[in-house]
Amino acid sequence: MYFGALEAGGTKMVLAIMDENGNETERESIPTRTPDETMPEMIRFFSEVPIAALGIGGFGPLNLDKKSAAYGSIMETPKLAWRHYPLMKTFEDALHVPVGIDTDVNAAALAEARLGAARGLESCLYVTVGTGIGGGVIANGRPVHGMMHPEIGHIMVTPDPADPMPNGVCPYHPHCLEGLAAGPSMEKRWGISAKELPHDHKAWDIESTYLAQLCAYAILALSPEKIILGGGVMQQKFLLPLIRQKTVKLLNGYIAHPNFEDGLETYIVEPGLGTRSGITGAYLLAREAYTEAGK
Ligand code: ADP
Ligand code: ZN
Image 1: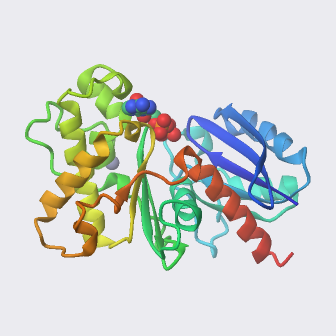
Image 2 (image 1 turned 90 degrees about the vertical axis):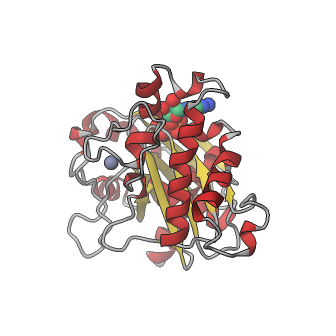
């Protein structure tokens, strides 16, 4: 039995076929253009193998209200061609299989909770720090939706006094985390890509200050059992210890828990599934959709 998995990103779509043991048998990556161009390509890929269900971890915001007629559609995205696009329904109609959908980061968080760094735990926060900043939350073993779904990348942070660009690049919020700490804001602030910034550049001190504010906020507001930080910017491995130290400092002893005894070393961690959290989460969503459909 085969399952389709789609990691639908704003710049690229990663498509995979996996068998019932989760082994990947096929993979393709295509640029995200308009739905008219990209959907037929994806439908063709998923039609080549008789998949039992499809799972989608999608860029958002997404409509995840099962009572809504627009369930599984993309909402107010700056990618205009995809605004209000019925992503889930289009696949259901074309492939005639159950389709499960959640945000890309909720899918990644689910995979980390079931199979990765938070395996065996009932809760975790997964955050990607890349072109944007997004966070998926697992509570009681399930992705949190609530009113919509968390948008933790846009929490307001206190600008670092040493930040030469204290107003970030988010068109909605001058002081949100994404606008101040995602890859594009680093590039705008320093004039070179985050990838090229040397380790001793003061950029990293400022970056870790912002990401520590996120971790402290998450600990206080959500109390996850593990915080997992992934995405392109976190490829800079020296960032993680800086973030841990600053999180400890920000909380200033207020939270007393054994997780703090090793300086959060086993609490704020990199993804256990490496760069595969998202696609693995999409696979898990496919499996769930299949089970829920009672097949
Ligand atoms: P996306 O968020 O688009 O899915 P990534 O997670 O790779 O993809 O994020 C891309 C962003 O991360 C870019 O802004 C880039 O500058 C930054 N980035 C990618 N790789 C690295 C790296 N090794 N070190 C620092 N920043 C990186
Ligand atoms: Zn914002």
